[in-house]
Length: 132
Image 1 (tube, rainbow, N blue to C red):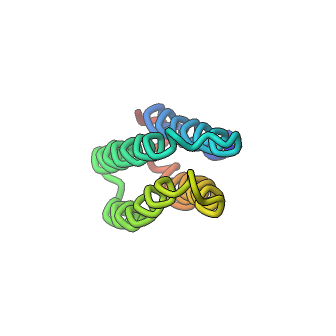
Image 2 (image 1 turned 90 degrees about the vertical axis):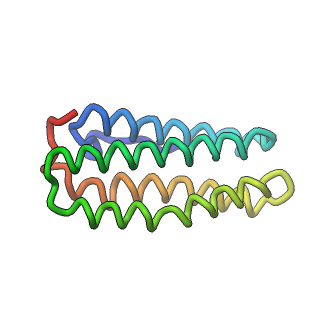
């Protein structure tokens, strides 16, 4: 199970709410797969991907609004994550018949959230602290 510790809170209500929802979605998919449930996996992963895209848009809008100087770099990072989302969807197509796809999907989901929240978003935490 993935959990966001206080260290990883952005102190922006909107972003923290999005990040918490991403974690909940990852945990839901992971628990489903650990329980052997695969029939709704593709739909849940598709919902995750769509939510990620809307999260990226909200985050970039906030960064532009507050005048974050490295917004272009952050947008580039978001674009670099799109192939990973495509891989997740490919794995989701195979989870019913392939145990390796299940394990790979779970790892990709966890690493994706870690990459977005921990690796890059913390770079601008101090800059946006307290914004919504």
